[in-house]
Image (cartoon, rainbow, N blue to C red):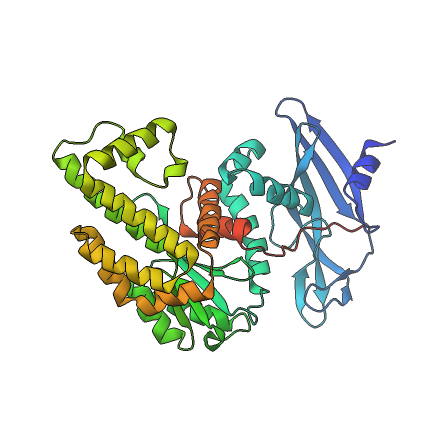
Length: 402
């Protein structure tokens, strides 16, 4: 079979297009394929679809998926049609979307690879600039995101995470029921919830429909929730409560560090849950708690709070607050005061049964997105990667029809 006919079949060209020439270079490992349209064919106007004659032509180029190991480029004379209503317009081609420098098949390959590996690696593998790949991913993510219907969203989770090293944060809003990322914005204050409230209206929803917001005890988040989601119950989840309890243990531990009383390796022996520690760490943990009662009391308070939150028992929580007040440990007395000040939200969590595991899972997906966007230059890239990983978007994947 003639090579040009073979390429024509592989590209799934319509009857109006033909391969007129191909050139394979063994020096730079490239394959160029020239396309042309058949004389006399009338192309639809991209504005109204009315078949119109060719006015003139413009040469365009597209990166195509590799043929064998060869980087492949399509070159075509694309007609500009003369529409009686809209004037001269560039006709659309069946193998690429308007404005893209890649064929639909190549965009599908880029989308698939970018789901599994960092975009920078995809760019290196395909010998393309990563900025071009980010533009493709942004097109499909934004197109799918704009179609999202939030009319059924009733309960949301609000959490902050770092976007890069240092004090640069983003706020993530997740649907507590569908478990998909709804919104990601720079910052961690009141204005982030205002921005989400505005975005809801773009997706057929209203802030008044939100009945529950699960978040941490940030005064800015609380103020934003009360102002923009007036019908929502504010819930403080146990994930953040346990973070605060862990910080309280750490403050007690640091008192002993300053006195030079703790041996090497004690940091990780005392942090986290006992069942996650190694045998040596468990042994060191037990000996330190026995040697220093204040440290043992701090560990005991943390573990008791964890058990009470798991049991979802308000009476047991009130007992714990009394214990913390009598503990003579300033960090836990402070934690007790904080919980009392936000008691309605803490009790609402116990009654709502919103799980903190979802927050941890979404945070994990955003961390994966950060690795996917490794070396990203802007928040825009992180946002694209986050929605690819956690947005559960229905992407309009490229399709080529003959």
